[in-house]
Length: 583
Image 1 (tube, rainbow, N blue to C red):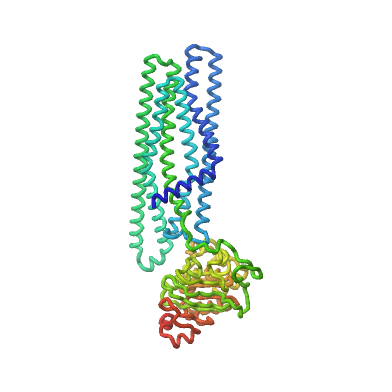
Image 2 (tube, rainbow, N blue to C red; image 1 turned 180 degrees about the vertical axis):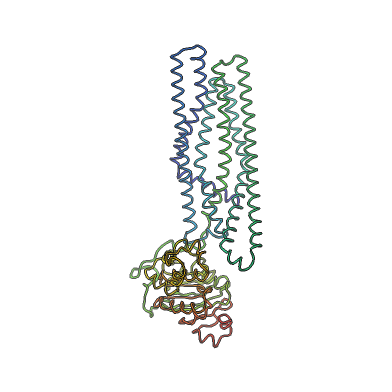
């Protein structure tokens, strides 16, 4: 798993750098010019001393002072422009990665969320994308530092071959040690981000379910769970910080030893008259200059290690397999009247005698459902009662095509789900799940979020107009994040109104009224029936009020269809149905 993450991480970093190559190259050139200018300053000061101070010469003094001023302007401009270009590349790369991650998370084939709570995906999309994009900032800085070291070595070679060789041979060794010391940091940085993402996911889950926890009196257990998770994240962060401190400290110590060795050799050459006063000044200046780029190289090594760790996590999400098979090739079937290799999907409002069923399940086997056979006629209002809630969830997930069945098939007007792209399928079938979230915004914005023109009728049918009338601001009242400013029943009515307003050809609704009182539920049942007249509707529920208005009710028990009839008939003849619906 770790090797795969490394491969994914390297691919992500290569893609990031390739996407920003122009800015990275420009930043490398500008940072290199800055470092070359920094390395030239001690040498120019040495010339200044030899030619304008040792032997005073006013013309030489002015000339060398002007040269120094020009070089300072040159290196200052290189630093500012290089830093700005690298920072822009970093921000743009991070944004590009975030957009790629969001597209992957929202991909209609799914799969990115598997095994990852929402908080973990948020952490990857924000912090890890930022860190991975940061490689476009650190690489130009590191390149400039290496060029500065090379320039310093060349200039030292002109002053003294032994000093130049010492730096040329010692710098690669020092950089290799930096990479070696950075490996533990990479591993621990990956673990740190994993723990932090897990803690974020737990926190998001606890905040989302705070009302449920209060109702169950489970606040203490939830707090203890988060405390344990937070402590693990803190321990991982401390270990990563300790690894970074060790890596930085060791690199500084090695750098100090290296510079001391350079100074020792330079001092010996001065004492033996191998170099003059100006060359001594240049050598001392270069010796003082060298710790800067050497420390920069050490910082870049640590930063790139963190970038690799985050890129690995980004790569895991981007390369996650789809939740459902891509067997349609992303194709969209032609509109009614066109031709295709398979049956056409008729337009909404097709006549009731259409030969192909609006919705059909054939020998469907998945997650407890066994050889399920179900046909829904066009325009039919069907109730489905499932005695096992887990089987109901499985059925809804299959109808939404969040998963493909192990065996059998589902079809829309005779066309298998797998022959349609998810986008085409979901433009014709809307599956409103029980745990539907509301979005930050007003009540009206939530109802109209899925499109559809008849949102006023849908609002009235779902009794969401009563919700608007009961809160300040009416339809413009904000619902808060995930609708937390509303009660459970109010959220369900707004979510149901949104599903009805979408006006899809086929609508599947799962337990839409579990938090609504009986009188309001009866009005909603009549409203749904009226608004969905002529459209195919499937209600997966055990609500007697909703089932009473259905054309037909199917009872699924033990994963198989046990009986089917109208609600009144099933109540009279089926004990299992009475237990599921009336108990």
